[in-house]
Picture 1: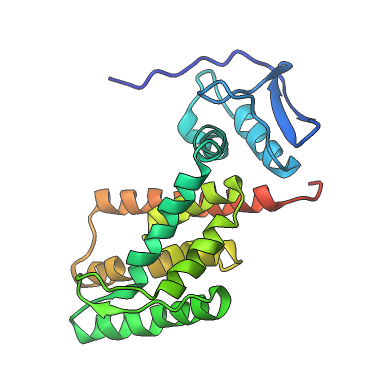
Picture 2 (picture 1 turned 30 degrees about the vertical axis):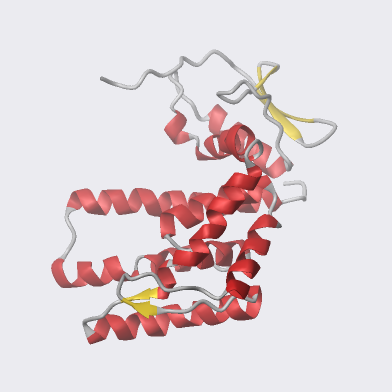
Length: 239
């Protein structure tokens, strides 16, 4: 069964300032989230990006073609009402970060992980005050309480809008360190590549089928969209 889609009902899309932030209106009517929350965004840049997504719709509204709008909905309907729970859930990734778990073989993969992941652990220690331990295999390795506390403090310092971006970055990569690195200005493309190190190694050995390649491409696009959402959330200048 095909997914039901709403029909386009508007002609004009406008961005309007509010007492706090900006909104998008369709023929003068404020856009609302699925929970009926009136959309209020922190920056004009984000509002303009959302407006462009509404303008690009055809006769049927396709939510999958509106990543910014979906991220705004998630922020307003889920993250803001449950900010403490969302932050705590993301901070927990520090205890099982992808970068901490290394292969037991072959030697080539072990060396690649060390050469590409160790610098990110060094970065986390320098920039975040969090030195994570590593182990070979999948048996959980205890992490220093000081490191977990530092990661938790950084996550809890973020705005709900930033937490929305971080949630995507972390869930798609499996790494809190890589997600926070994007928030600190590291390029998302590079962080995505690092998160795919094991899978890329396997693909080099055995190849990848078309269906898997499509799945990976969709996840990569979502990861990069999270970086774009973050940049628009933080853009306090007129665009």
